[in-house]
Each structure stands twice: as structure tokens, then as C-alpha cells.
Image 1: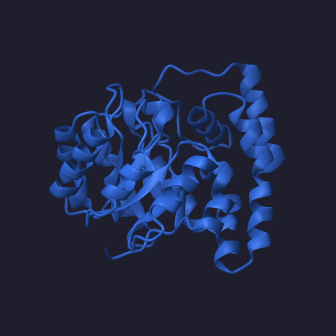
Image 2: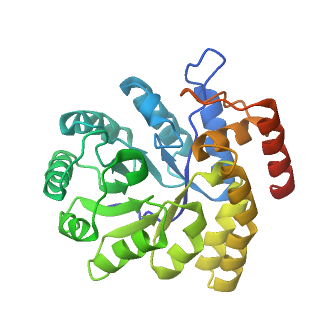
Length: 294
């Protein structure tokens, strides 16, 4: 692999225009906002609303991110679909665009056994030339990758890590412990509450939704840690705790993040799925952002 995936990658929102179509210009503006803060890009994920994008839109989003980043930072694109063949089909198109790696969510809706997950991921990794990250988010998919399963998959030369968004330290540490003796396999932290702890315990990177709202504040957790200032990193994590807990209490966290970015004056549009915020909730989000983000 040409580039180590490390630091902060922002799970970037997908902007839409007033009619609900892709707003590529606004996406590029958001990419540059993240680059200015020192963050890489994770596109087409949960915060990017992949589940309401069609195949061509996923390709367009990824191409726009790669083009705008232009080699200045890491770009990881999510390609996971329910069916193995559809995941491979999308992956073969995405890998041509110049991403550093792809991320593959566990298939959702259909409950799968661990051996079935191994078969799925092995087929995807065999079919693609671009490096693959596993993506564990059981609350949304209904399927959980177990640490021993990940250890088996880590032996595949084209599977280079796992993004864990289960939301608990127990899950994250389970993966870190399972693969600690395996070279060239990284654990990426998903929950914004565990960024600092993840870095301390061996995560190479975090994928942050909250960085859409507070790019510099989230990057500070990494930049302090990378400089050897562990206490400064811990304090930077503490500094975003209020923002995270208050904002995420308003509604489904990706929707709350996008609404916050919109209310900050950025032209990212509404979420496509059937979520809405009352005037009172929007006022609450404005107040939260004003309080915590400089």
C-alpha cells in the first residue's frame, strides 16, 4: 500500500441541493475545509448517506473527493452493499478513481453467521486490487464481526484493517487485542467518544463524523498525540465531549451533524432520509454549535 492510513479521517457529509440532487461544488468546499484542518476524507459512509445514494452518485462523490484532495491526504471510500456481487461491482469502479483504500460494511438486513461473513469479505478482497478495510457497525446492520473472525480475515493480504463503530471500548479493545501480533493490519476507531483512547491503545486512525462540525477541534486530539503530548490529546478529547453529547442528544447523530453544518452556514442541504428537526431543535443545535465551536 502506498500510503499509511493514519490520523483523522472525516466521515464527510454528502451535500444535496434544494431538489435533493448531489451538490458537488459544496462537497468540494467541505473537503477543503477538512484539508485545512489537517484531516483526511472517508466518503460514502454512514454520515455520507450511502444508503440513500445510487451507484452513480457513490462514484461521483468519490471522484469529487479524490480530485479535490489531489494527493494531499488520505481518501477512503465506502463500498459495502448487501450482496457480495454488488459490493465487488461498485468496488471495481471505485478502485479506478485513485482512493487509498475502501471500506466494506457488513451486509445488512440479512442475518449472517461468522463463516458467511468470512466468505463475503474474502470474495471482495480477492476481487479488488485496492486495499480493504472491514467495517463493523452492528447497531445499523444487525451483523457483528467477532474478534476471532477479524483475526482470520486479517491474514488476507488485501485486508488491511477494520473500522469499528460498535460504540464501545469493549468492542474496540477486543479487535486491538485480537490483531496486536499481526503486521500490516490496523484498527480504525469509529466512535467520537473514543478517539483519544483509541490512539493511546494502538488505533492508527479515527473516522470522525463530528469532525464535519469541528474539524480543528477533532484534529487536535490526533496532532497532540502524534507530537507525544498525550495529556494534551486527552484534554482535546475532553474539549469536544460537551459538543458530542449535547449534539447527539438532539437526534440520530449523522442527521444532527449534517443539520449543524447546514446551520453553520454551509450549503450542504437536507438529509435525504425521512428525518426532520423542529424549529426548537434547530435553535438548540445553533446554540450548541455557538457554545462549543470557534
